[in-house]
Amino acid sequence: MSQIPPLDVVLFGATGDLVMRKLIPALYHLHQDGMLSAEVRIIGVARSELSSQAYVDRAHAQASTFLGGAYNDGTWQSFAARIQYQAVDATKPETFKALASVIGNTGRACVYYLSTAPNLFTPTCRNLADAGLISADSRVILEKPLGTDLASNKAINDEVGQYFGEKQIFRIDHYLGKEPVQNLLALRFGNVLLEPLWRGQWVRDVQITVAEQLGVEARGEFYEKTGAMRDMVQNHLLQLLCITAMEPPASLEPDSVRDEKLKVLRALKPITGASVGNNTVRGQYRAGAVGGQPVKGYLDEAGIAPDSNTETFVAIKAEIGSWRWAGVPFYLRTGKRMQEKLAEIVINFKPIPHCIFDTCHVGRPVNRLVIQMQPDETVHLHLLAKQPGNTMRLGEVALDMDFSETFKARQLEAYERLLMDAMLGNLTLFVRRDEQEAAWRWVEPILDAWAESGEKPKSYTAGTWGPAASSALLGRNGHAWHEEI
Image (cartoon, rainbow, N blue to C red):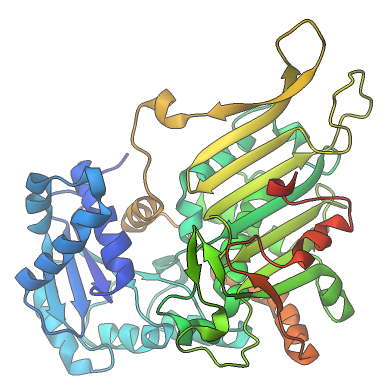
């Protein structure tokens, strides 16, 4: 791996949860692994009036928890020497003068990570430009959500684009940085075995699930305006669908990969009008128990309207209009307060055409590839094999791909990989503007149809796998979710 050259990483929203829980630990790991040159600085920026030492103390208190066994006091001390803090109000241009004095005239590149509300993206970029803090080598990392619809997404991109060129803008989707997603590309395009099977001739269906046990927590006011479709489907799930369904790119150059993802988004068959009711399910959790602990329903959460129609669960049957995937349903599912914390892609292959054994599990997909991203990062290939004994009885076995055992190296966390790529200027794992717009074009008619129908989301008990209509969505095709097989 290339070592990060001298530069400044400027973290806006530096006192927030994402920076403390993910970004500081990710940068610590890169420091610990010797990936950061000695001159790399980390500058925390937020409105709070703190000294650099007070900020480092706050970061240390949280990082020692989030890093777990990876924490080392000596390593932290050398890492903390990189960190500075500057109070800046994104809406007040005069406060950027102090930031300019901290950055100085070093001539080094700056990577600005905007871990803030999207309405602060424009004033932040404008004030950076007015303070002379943007150069041709500068980069900006934008956290989701980028808008609530196509129009607002375009507006944000237009505004940020006044100050940064497209190749300087890194729109982050942390699922693209996960190790199993990277291995999906390697398995498909680095081996001859799977690629001939990766098509409608052999694949029965594809299931992509991102399930959370958490509720809305302290984000009720935000979530009420967003919902599961905008929060998860438009970005994370559609990006995972693209990685799964894309054609082999000409190379791993950023635009070669992103061109192929864009083709998938443009090939998605529209779900509009009456077809929305037949191909989508939206739900909203009610009181129940998760992990043995009682939890309140969505309507009882803080910041939620008592008559809210906001969905906390979405299931969609999508289809891709291409030769490779014609007729193959892609089932997308996400929800809060689900039975398990789970993120996985399941490729269900078609049953064998003729079974010569008594126990072939006819009608169900015994051959399947399961790429799991959480809670564990694993890849399992499920096959049938003979059970021990004097009869020819078949049983299911899984070939487990344990990359940590094979390669004897610590796997990079998603934010580690993405931060490193942004610092190196590699856009491959980041979302291009036209990808975002294509995703919004596909999602918007579904949102519009839900709003026009006036129907309330289907209720489901917290701690389950969502409303029964989700299972019925697959059942109409004779299919079932992975955990129901």
